[in-house]
Image 1 (cartoon, rainbow, N blue to C red):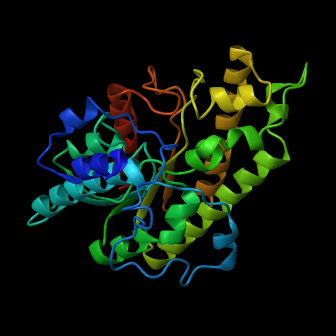
Image 2 (cartoon, helix red, strand yellow; image 1 turned 90 degrees about the horizontal axis):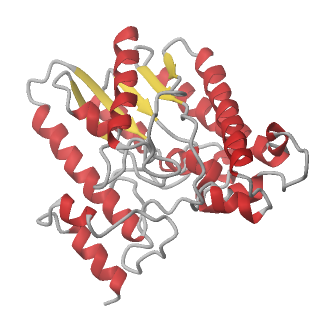
Image 3 (cartoon, rainbow, N blue to C red; image 1 turned 90 degrees about the vertical axis):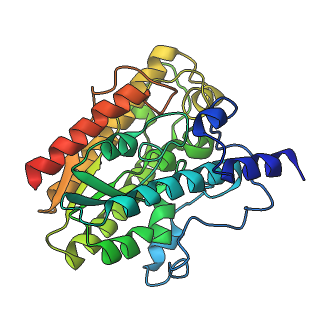
Length: 316
């Protein structure tokens, strides 16, 4: 048995406390998949075959998510099981707000951080059916379509949706979608045709999901968000990919990321405005401290959760 197979087995063993695992593991999307789980996807057993009833263009959008594989996949499955047990325990007689959540590591950061959904679970007035997977791409969660079964089965009041960050920067993609360094080039000019194509794909995916779920249930409130201004720190998502294309200056790196987040938020705001029952939450300026290049510390995830909860109650 390989070292990774041993790690996966330990993570899947729920007798081992999260705090113990957190002292040994940091999530790393670049770790190779374990042979035991490489073929698994994070779709539920009842989910339809990948791509069924989806338009062809969805399957043509790049999807390099490995959120179901290896150590990352084991952590994601462990956290999902724990959360769904909480949902089941609360469900009998619950008369608060029922929520289905789907998304990326802002909604599911196993073990080491308390993410947005962890903080929302602290509230007695919310019960959440959580589908998020750390490291997941928006293109992948649309393909696997789990949110559709969950919304149909549980009739939530609210659908929380988080996605797009990994599609922009996962797997070192930033080095291929930004323009290379050129002296005097303005930060916004690095967001050229390749980056605009990624934004266009994300806009199509979001519009597809929002049209799908709001048409099926006109009373369903959908709450989604952009991201705050992440800070490159020589990490694998932002700093190192930019350095590979000659963007070495830390101040320029920060300005480029700021422009990226402004453009992504503008897309999210525009999409949400076209739907009566969709609420976009602007999170720029909310995060005061970062755990790494993409993820706030636990307390700041709590601040994000407060914004999301306030948005829910404004609309409900």
